[in-house]
Image 1 (cartoon, one colour):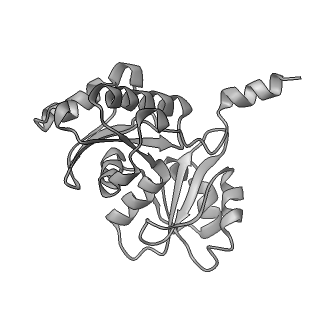
Image 2 (spheres, one colour; image 1 turned 180 degrees about the horizontal axis):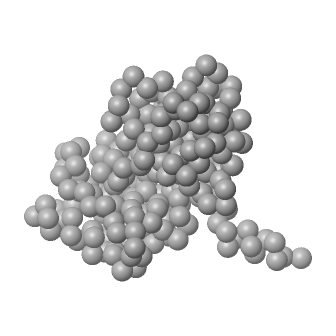
Length: 231
């Protein structure tokens, strides 16, 4: 099964091609350029570098969130367009799930994985996973870093997880204040390859283009602003 995958949950994002469960091509995006400039060129580039035509793709996969609201809308719309043009279905994948799996694939013997995505406004999109990265223990949520750790206190009694994600990098001080200077914090890798592999492992989760729903967790800023203006 050939899967074309896209992640636009952060400024850089990535695209990848997964063949029979293995990543055969992956391109990290250029954060200095917006997605309007890069898509669908990056998607076509990863296919060209693997010498695969778009018609050979069996399944599409996209990070459905949480993350940048604008990025999510652009990424999902791009994959919906490809799906409608090719008659393929899309597997929506949680970016938090992908982060946890990425961590677990890179290291063993970790008690738990804390996936943190920068949610701006001093908050993080967060979820806590077991050592395999595949089982959700707590989350997802959109809270301030310390509030997130307070929510997790019962689950993490006596356990120091490994943190992964741009939210963990940004709020390193809060994490180390709670767990100590030796707490491990990992930068996020490109996620499109992991997203493609998760989709390839669960093709039954594929949906028609119109059925892809963003995972916001927190209401988009434009909706919050509209609510504040309402009488």
